[in-house]
Image: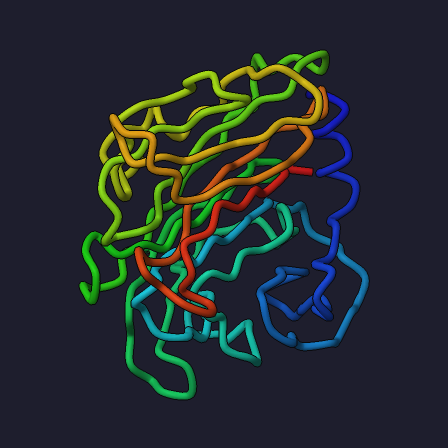
Length: 249
């Protein structure tokens, strides 16, 4: 895990979807799911690290602002996530999300301090289908994680899907996880050790054998993974119910 954090501190992996870093006096380099501003002066200030998960399926596409400065030049659509943690000048920011191409505020993270060499995840979610979009700031804690093991956590981001159970290779990992339950239970934002190797992750409706999403993925020692359920029950296209994974490196 120390090796993973060192890699995060020294470099930020770009999304493999044609996204370039944005910079300026406020932001050194933060990645979103559209095209971003392309000026790239050399970084000079201590950095904080931020990832963003737009898991509000009935929310609008969003423009992202740090304080009053727009940092995205293409809509950040529901279901979009950053590929990892992205370097931003340390400091105090309000992160605001406005409806794309408008000045209508959808939600925000209030003015907060972002420390140097600290890691944050921003989780956007709907508590219920067609309900308002909310935002949660999570300060991620990698202390105590060993580089000989992989780790995981799970975010439930489907507001019209009931409680779910999560299995790995037919072994029950977690039960009765509900939409956005990590908002009120910070323990669910912590990472838990898991066996390394190639695995099949299955999400079932709680207490049943009804499979609603699957994922075949590899867990590598020294890495932390966020599993996330996104979309809607009976959703189509971008809102199809899907299990994804975000590796924190």
